[in-house]
Amino acid sequence: MNQVSEFVEYLKEVFEQFGSVQARRMFGGYGIYHDGIMFGLVADDTLYLKADEVTAAHFVSRSLDQFEYDKGSKVVKMSYYLAPDEIFDDPEEAALWGRRALEAASRAKPKVRKKGKR
Image (tube, rainbow, N blue to C red; front, side, top):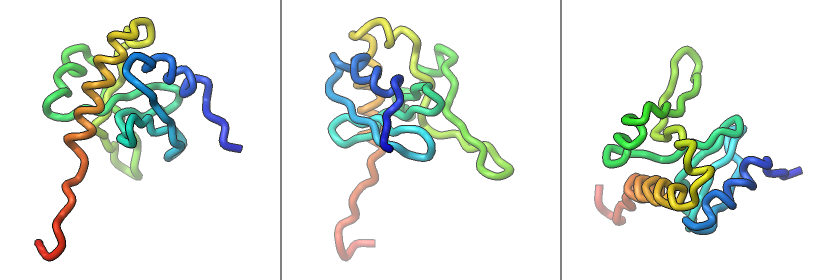
């Protein structure tokens, strides 16, 4: 059964002004996508948004935690941060944060190497 959580369904409303979003199951949670690019992830019904060196300061300045998980004996931090609460009440804020996360995800996409070059 491929049932999506109510929280993940709700994100489609949250990001309505930003644009269409899709969810795909991954590692016990969900990847949140726009135009085929993963810009968010959901773990335990908590939304995290993609960040990079350009956008991380927006999250850090607001003391929003970085997503982390235990991998054996060490903690691994990923480049996703807790989404700010106001995006759930303000469609314009949701669109702004969604665009930032999508831009960070777009910058992080691996560069395709041309054949024959190493």
